Image 1: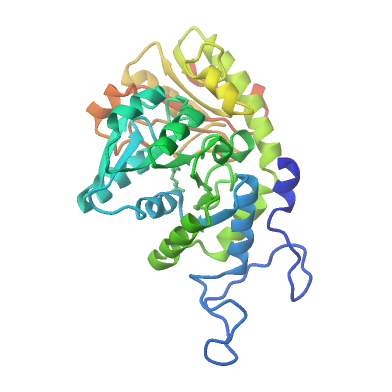
Image 2: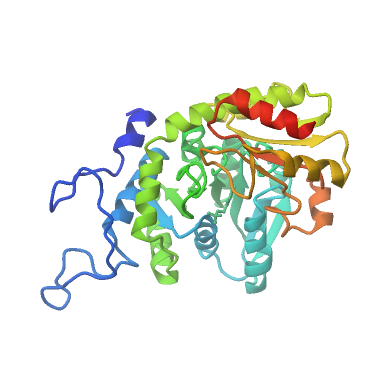
Length: 379
Ligand SMILES: *Cc1c(COP(=O)(O)O)cnc(C)c1O
């Protein structure tokens, strides 16, 4: 079945008690038992909720996986993956990734004795020199946030397999419409469903998708033991959001392409980061593993002064100055002071994330209106 069809039908079985076409919001914490231990498979809502189960089935199908698990946020999903590990284990992660992932790894898990190596993953071969007997997980994000670097999933997956290491890919920026890492050999796909899956900036949620039943059981055990489950209302919102993912992504891609090219030709713009440019560093790999290039764009002005970028960031009207991404409305963000402020400045600069970098989440409005808004703000 094609993705466009799965997006509409995944997880949507009519409600057994009424035939309701839409999955009801099962707003309950517990379920009645007819005798001790005799129940309908539902005991307590941290472990089982029909609205969540419908969504988890949808997550699995749209990522071409067997099993899906929903979490109360993207970072809660990441947290569950790291809890597969034990003290002494080592993780290889990218040096350009979501700031909250870096914060979770370096500020929470390092003190439990897990070691993280943050490396340049654009060259997959570079990973090999960091592998030792303790390496248990490779954490890859592609395209990366915010520099839009591309990691070759197939190449990293083959290195991971050869060394018996799990590979988890954060697929938030691409969404399942543009990229399916399990098909390219990843063991786990992670999403911040807060972004493109939810799509309307009205919910915080995360998910994991995998094919291996044993891995699913371990992650389900962590999900219910640690308890970072989303509520049924939030599950309903994400289920609803997913149904238009393909239509939204088409427009995000179209608008992203127009705006990326327009920015690149602007006399006041120094550099534009977007994997769709034929001369972008990861373009060939992006073309191979993605079905489009998305609506995330970063750029820098020629005038690198704080005054210049601050003026731009405060002058847009259609682009709202806010963290997050992937919603229908356009957002503008300053990674250094907002989404990536938790990364030490020295570390940021070393990895190419300058003070003046501006990140756009291009929404699904009219592209010309968005360009006019940016044009006025750039001045
Ligand atoms: C937002 C984001 C996360 C974290 O997800 P939350 O839902 O905010 O917890 C992780 N990875 C990427 C790439 C993100 O953009």
